[in-house]
Every structure is written in structure tokens, then in C-alpha cells.
Length: 109
Length: 113
Image (cartoon, rainbow over all chains, first blue to last red; front, side, top):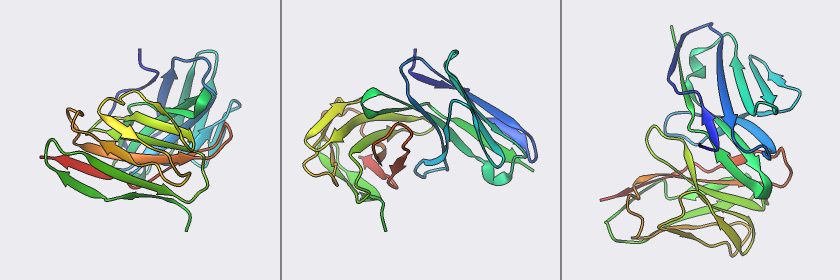
């Protein structure tokens, strides 16, 4: 089983739709959680950190469920500019950063 | 400006040659990482270093080597033992603290012909 697994993509959604991505992690000792965004042929950039109580940043909401070992990302009112690959990232002891394979989102007119 | 710099952006090499990719950061970060990304795939960890003169193998270290002689620098050598070296290579650095984000360089696209 992979250490970090994400929903397979691509997700093709109309502009204005709400879309949700899930990510599961296998190691219960995982400590920090992030969502990164990667545009085509570019480096990943931080979208948001994920906190135990859940957190929101504009149209984006992230949730963490430690008991079930998954994190989620909700995007409301999707824009064309949200089209990208979204990467789930998990860290654990010793600074090891593990990425999921990513979920591709395509927002269409 | 503070940041992380990878060079070169594009690199072409003949099969059987070793090649070294550069990664420099001026963010004063202790941890540095090398990832490989193949088309349509996620990032796979090659090596990471938590402190100067120390580094650990990631999930796909075979055929690669690194050094960490200075805090600012973490070069990656792709050796001739790496069977399929053509890929997009990304370097990252991260400060201390549990919730600290990682910052990436712009990547090096290596093509071996």
C-alpha cells in the first residue's frame, strides 16, 4: 500500500461547481499535512496547510480526520484558473515529506 | 530575493555519462530534498538531508548520489547506473517546525539520449 494515496483523476467540472478531493495516508505517526498545487510543467506551490480543526482560505476548505487517516480539499465556485494538479503531502518524523500522485482538475466553461 | 535555485533548467546528456544537478537555497533552511517526477506521475523522493553532512535515502535512491557539504547547497548526481534517468527533477527546502511548508526550485528537465 502506498504511503499517501489520492483520488484518481482527472476531474472535469463546469465553472462554478464544487469539487472535493480526498487523500488517505497509511502511517498513523504522520504529523503535518498540506495541499500543494502544481501547474503543467511547473514546480509545486503550497495551496494550504491542513490543521486538525479544519481550515478555510477563501473558496478552499481543508479537513483532517486523524482517526480515519485522511485529508480532504473542497473547492467551491470553481474557476478556470483552478485547473491544475492538486498534490496531497504528508510529513512524519525526521522531516520526510511524502507526496501523493496528485489529482488533476480541469474546470471547463 | 530569498529562494531556491536549480540549474540548469534543461539538460541533455548522452547515455552512460554522469551528470550533476545544482540546487542552492538562501532561505537558511536545514532540510533539503530531491524529487523525481515522470509525466503524469507524482513526486517520488530520491534523497533528503536534514542537516549539513547528513542525508538519507528516499524511495528511489538507486543510481543517484548526493552531498551536503554546505547548508545552502544540495547537489544531485545522476549516475550511469540509473536505468531511466530522463525526468523532471525538483529540489525543495524546508525550515524547522512541524507545520512548515516546503519551497521548490523551478526544476531541471533532464533528457538522456
